[in-house]
Image 1: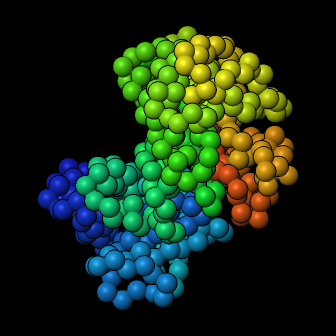
Image 2: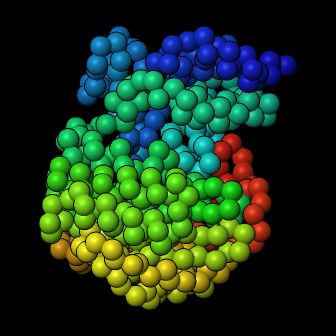
Image 3: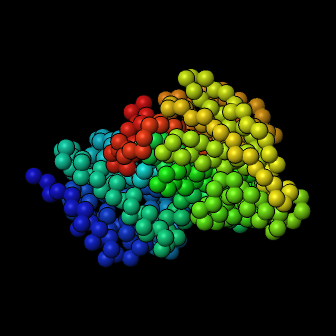
Length: 410
């Protein structure tokens, strides 16, 4: 009988290693457990279209990036078994020329970070498969904990160079782009323009509420990124001080007026959902209207439009009720999805075809659609946040290996 996966022993091995060697410690433990000849972690890159195999191999395929002892091999996702594992969050076992290949997702609360790939000497029995899946889930936490101490993972994910504006913008986004809970799932995605356009999205969850925002700063490059920093930093600060939604918006607006140059502004929407009462309120600061998919129909959510953030000191933003019904899918966008050379994209029609997709896939699908519509030449950032509302009382989610059962098998 195969030895059982021992989480305590794995964590002790990881803790004894340097942060940069944390993944290697997991790989060594799995090799010992399964007899695998190869164990690789493939991390999702920032484009969403590729995986990156991180290693310290002395001989690497052509095109592999190398930095000191580290190497990063980029592998396109489209049409691969890896893509199917990420989409379904189900493990895969196949016989290849290299041996028996097992691929499992590396996921935390629906945030698909990549996959774990093993080359085994023989087909794994049910126990080995369960152990490898458990190790893949544990690896997600290992990466989250150790990426705070090293640039290795960030370097690996950057398959294209970042500008200074993109670096600033990246720091404004949440650490995880997907979050699953018992009452909802949300996911966000940003397709950056050739010159960064100042888009952001953010969310936070506490015991009784979910808050999310989507914003679009005027201008491009470093100026837009700094303007976005002022607004997002202020919204986070006021939220963490415990202010209500209206006060958060008012204070963020006044901070922008006080610290930004005249004529600089940010459009945006800030939403708060009370998880006990299932009541939602939204502030709409001059931003494109959200879309709602309900019972197979897509429609704009009608909202009153207030001034953008930063236009006038002391602006009182209206708290508008947003009706939520179980089964609703809400999609928030920036104008990069609708204007300029993306105008040929019918976002509502594209959304109508997503009913069977997980929100993580929805935002990628809409991002891919706008890239096709513009020939890959976005003139403005295009950002999407998708919120699926299941409703009902607060409860634990039904999950396996870091992923919810919602839409996992479609």
